[in-house]
Image (cartoon, rainbow, N blue to C red; front, side):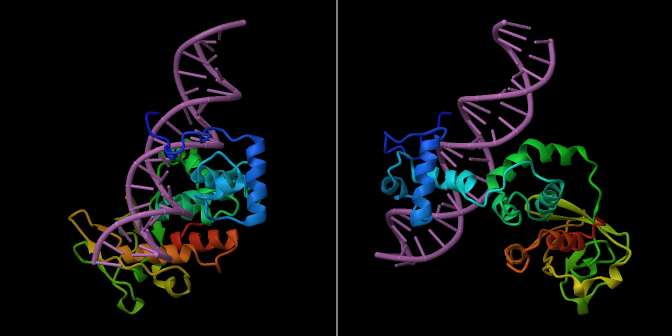
Amino acid sequence: MGRKPCCAKEADLKRGAWTAEEDGILEAYIKTHGEGRWRSLPKRAGLKRCGKSCRLRWLNYLRPDIKRGNISPEEEDLIIRLHKLIGRRWSLIAGRLPGRTDNEIKNYWNTYLRKKVQNQHEPAVVLSNLHHLVQVSREGDLVAVSKADKAPELVPGESFSVLTEGNWWDLLLSSDAGEAASAVPVPQLNLVSLCGDDSRCDLHAENEGMLEAWMCDPAQTSLDRELESLARFLHCDD
DNA sequence: AAGAGCGCCAACCGCTGCGAA
DNA sequence: ATTCGCAGCGGTTGGCGCTCT
């Protein structure tokens, strides 16, 4: 590989695949002493591994709440939606999929979903509550607005693009935009900067924080509710 | 039957952010 | 304000197994 080992100082550290014996030692130690202090854990547990390796092995394989088996269509759908929403933030996405790890989702995306999504003709994303979020000038440029009382005059069917996390979203204002809004339990994104002549804009940094807060909201516990909420956010019919 | 090619996935690496000193 | 150590993150790699020729 040509890279230096992560724990190069300790030459006798073992690397590569974990044995069942090592798994047993790590599992037993963490069950007794709990997670954390990864750096010193190998020494305390009597493992010839670096702390990073122990942490990764526990989080990705040994943790008792790990879900085994294939990714379900519902999970796959959620991954695609979340990826569209927040980009390659695998740990955040994994946080919305109980029992799945960021590594597993990252691998699944890189080996399967990326190609699948690329092969699909991507329909425009329709945001029914778009009038709550953005304003489009008569010239077709986006300008900042976030409050309903500043609801701009948008033309149903009008489309434009928004950049989030390096992904361009093609947005299309739905025809029922006038009735959505207030009941939608998602962050109100402020679209604050933009606009070349192609009507594209960047999401302001503060929106990323709002998104993350929403993603981490413990009230959002049920997968069904998440899907429903996301579907409402993205105004998808399924 | 065997070897080349390919895909999957566990594991590693470097980087970053954050809290403590 | 700065430095240091650690945990966590996302990108990348390499081994293994399966398929194809």
